[in-house]
Length: 307
Image 1 (cartoon, rainbow, N blue to C red):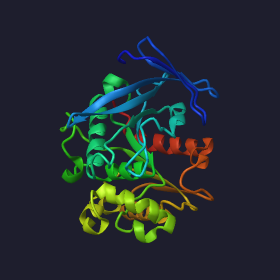
Image 2 (image 1 turned 120 degrees about the vertical axis):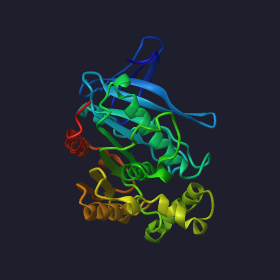
Image 3 (image 1 turned 90 degrees about the horizontal axis):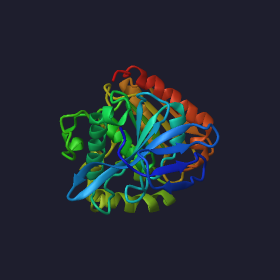
């Protein structure tokens, strides 16, 4: 099932320690606390854009048969970050496969390149579900910060030509997802600056200019195209939204807006306000909260349990 690669031994704890041993046919890792074992296959190419290979890393519970899949989209203000950051890796312990995906960052290509790449990743993962051993009918997507924004946009734009793009080799495969988990993400780029603190403006303004490929004031249509709130409808998947009420960087009103749009559309939605927390931190990934996210995902994906 898995291509030849090195064995990676990793302990699931706040500081990840990896030991790479050359040989064998699958990556195998062990969680220190729960003694859970999972399989890892890194660097799976899913598309090629202009000679640049786009890749993902796949994690799968060793003892799970055909588990549901969570696609994880890393954060980093759309301009940096790496798929090596998988803050929710503990969800493997709850029976999920995780595909952590790279996408073109804004210094390489402005929007909508990022959403085109992620749609291609969803299509690739669905088309290759049997090959890699997870349930192609049960795909959730999530991420933190800018990754949450992109994940939300994927979740609410199935079939939208401007968002689907033409990246990858599986253009006739659906990019639909069955659940969304958003950790302190943006949802309305037309209102985000008005909601931001001075600190937030210092972070967000240059990031948005890179995202648009030009001045903010010249890209109002692109800002709307990049805003999930304008595309929410009754056909969208259930959502679990988390945001810290002391976030100085990403206004919590961004998640209030997405929550409101989901409720108005009649979509099942949970808004988990992480009291006292800012932009990320351990409270978002504490065991009890991870268990709640896992329960939500299992419930949301249960109706899509076919192969």
